[in-house]
Every structure is written in C-alpha cells, then in structure tokens.
Amino acid sequence: MSKLEDVWHKTWRLLSDDILYKQRGIQKNKDLQLTNDQIEAFALAEIETMLQSNGSNLRRFSEMPFPDELIMFEGQNKLIADEISYDIEEMTLEHDKLYKGLTDEKSIIDRRVIDAVLSQEGGVFFVYGYGGTEKTYAWKTLCALVRKMGEIVLPVASSGIASLLLPRGRTTHSRFGIPLNVTENSTCAGIRPGSDLVDLLIKIKLIIWDEAPMMHKYCFEALERSSMDIMRLVDRRNMHRLFGGKVMVFGGDLRKILPVVPKGTRQDIMFATVNSSYLWDSCKVLTLTCNIRLQSSSSKSFADELREFSKWILSVGDGKAGDPNDGKAVIEVAKYILIDPGVYPISAIVDSTYPNLHDHIWEAKYFQERAILAPTNEIVEIGNDHVLSTIHGEEKVYLSSDAISKEEGNFGVHEIYSTEFLNTIRCSGLPNHIIRLKVGAPVMLLRNIDQTSGLCNGTRLVVKHLGNHVIEATVISGSNVREKIL
Image (cartoon, rainbow, N blue to C red; front, side, top):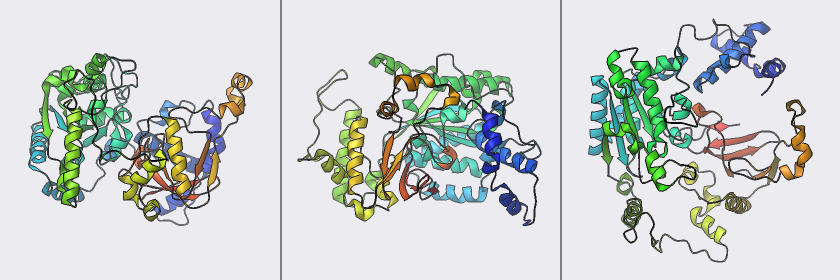
C-alpha cells in the first residue's frame, strides 16, 4: 500500500464503528461518550494489538499515527502478557488428564525434558516418531505442564497447518522472524535489541519445534545464534550453551519430505537437513515407536489392515521396499490400496474418498479425516468441479478484482496484456479469476490471514452462506473447529 495515511484518514471511522459499543461494555457505562480523537486512538490501539500478535507493530509504518500510550499496555510487554494469560488451575486439570494417557515412551520424554527445564542448564532434544505415534499429544502434555508451573512455553511448527494443532501454536518464521532466504550466517530479523520479543525469549523455559526436518538447517542455526546473543547478556556462561541455555525440543520424522532445495541434488538436500547441522552432535534423540492409531482401532480386521499398511509405509520410508537400491527402486503397491479407475477415474477417486457425501456434508470430522492430493492444479480443478457438481443447491460465481490501479502507475501492464488474458493466468498459490461455490462446499485458505484465530494457509472450512460480498464459513480443521468465519 503506497499511501497508508490517506487510506487511514478515509476509513478510520468505518474501522472504529464498534469502538464506542465495546468501551461501554468494558467500562460498564451505557451512557459513555467518547470524542473522535479518543475513538481513533482506541481503534489504533486495537490494530497495534493485532499487529503485535503477528510479530509486527505500528511503529514500522512511519506514515501512520500511533495510539495514545495511556490506552496501550503501559509498561507491559504484550507478547509476555499473551503467553501468561491462561488459567493455571485449568492448565493443572488439563495436564493431569493428559498425563494419565501417556505411554511409557512419552512418560520418559516428558520426564527428561522437564528435568532439563528445572535444572536451568538447557538442552536440545529431537523426538523422532512416525505418523500415528501421536507426537502432538506429547507436545500438549509438555505445554500444560510448563504452564501449570506458571512458566512460558513457545510451541511452534514449520508450517501453518502443523501450528494449528499446537496449543497457542505459531509458525517459526512468524514467531522468531527467521529470514525467508536463510543463509549460513543468518540471524533472526525479528529478534532486535530492546524489542518485546527479546524480553519474551529471556523469560521462556521451553521451545517446542514440530515438523523440524522439513526446514533448512540454517533456520535452526539462525535461531541458535540469535538466542545465544541475547542470553549471554543475562549470564556470560550462556555463550557456551546451545540456544543460550534454553531447552529446545525438535520433533518430526526424517522419512518425510526433507527441505526443498531448488534444483538441488540428493547430496544438497541431505546437507540441508537438521541432522547435518553442528547442532545435531549435541542433540539427544528420543524415539516414539508405539502406533496409537492401531490400539484405538474399532475392529480387529481394520486394525490388521492398518497395521499392514503402516508396516509397508515404514518399509518405503526406511528404503527397504523393493530391491536393494541407491535411492531409486521399483516398489510394488498392494492391490487393496489401489482404486479401480473404471470409466471415470476422477469420479472413482471422489466416491472412494468421500462415500455418501450428502449424508455427512455438515460433519466436520468427515472432512477432517479425508483429503485428495493431486500433482497439478489442472487435476485439482477437475476434482473440485466434480465434487461441486455432486453437491445440491444453487451455484454462486465470484470474480476476482481485475481493474488496474491507476494510482500505482501500472499502465504498461495493461497496454501489453488484455484484461481477458490476465484473467486466464493460473499458477500455484494464486486463486483463479473465477471461483464457483455452493453452500456445503469445503474450501481452503491460500494465505495466512490471522494465525492467532487459526486462519492460515491450508485451513479448511465449510461454506454456510453465500452473500454478494461476504462468505460465511465454519472452520473444520485445526484447533478452532466449529468457529464461524466471515
């Protein structure tokens, strides 16, 4: 946005429309009156609060006015306030409940990590477990335990979807300000001297980083470098402790997708993984091998089928499936896993994945447990069109904004390419010009809109109502299930 102050001055009255109503409720005075200056200051204060919760602040935008300091959290670190704003009694009950469900392996992890937290000597752990061993359950237990002690724990994940599964989870890039183009000597840009984030990092007792293997090793080293730089000011001995003496717990499965190195060789990818970092030598590896999904299966036949499939998947991940190989092999897929394509392959896939769709269309769990992965956007569109055609109701068509902004000076683009041509462009991460929806259709966000509310890239929702300019939907994935979104 090129003219922030102009936009603000023209829209602040609209953006602050409910400020007076809210303040009357907060101050319990239905006759309360505020001046325009006060209403504008309260609106700016709310925007500042939202920005801070997403790792930014209004002072980054020099053209924007700043709210009255008396309205903001005077002398209080907003990030720390957010992390300690939980009920300790509630956390105690939650931990007691979760602790009863811990397996022996998870109990060992729980004990070793907490011992490191209490010793205040720091430590780096890697919890290695494949899908079904319920690493997320271990993270929730650790978070509840640290919080019931009145301390701060930061659960983060490498992706937005994974972060939604963690209690008050965030992505690592948004939490620590890790550069997108990370290098060997990178540091965390968001960790600046005197910032609220620095004070938060000094106070935290534990950092949990889920889905760590998919990140480049330079990301971990950047955080380690920044943490050590901060913590040496607290205690000189922290210069010789990894992450400045903080307790770090990484988690993930090295059989899954490793860091993506554009045009990289196999050696380049291996070099980029976490276990190629100098941090790995000091990392204590803890393993989870008990597949909880097998134990919780409803029937013996289904459990046997799941066990067989799990065994086969692990053999592929361990490189044991197929003939002995150097990274390439022909792997035979069991017939019971394959879907008979029939005459209409897309229809066969949809019917197999979403049986009796109409009977379950309003069940969040039904969509939570199912997804179709496709290799190209073209196939995604074919699948989406087929699913939409099977849903009853009237279809509504939405178009993207396709007018060229004259104020931005983009005249050349419009002269070279026609609007009709620009509207036909389809590429990864960019929504199509035309989208067709029906009430009951599942949709997915393609952007991080508000992570604290669970609205990030990959969040799935079901459409409840289609207006001309607003879509009402209900969240069906992550920790904000059943929450209504406009």
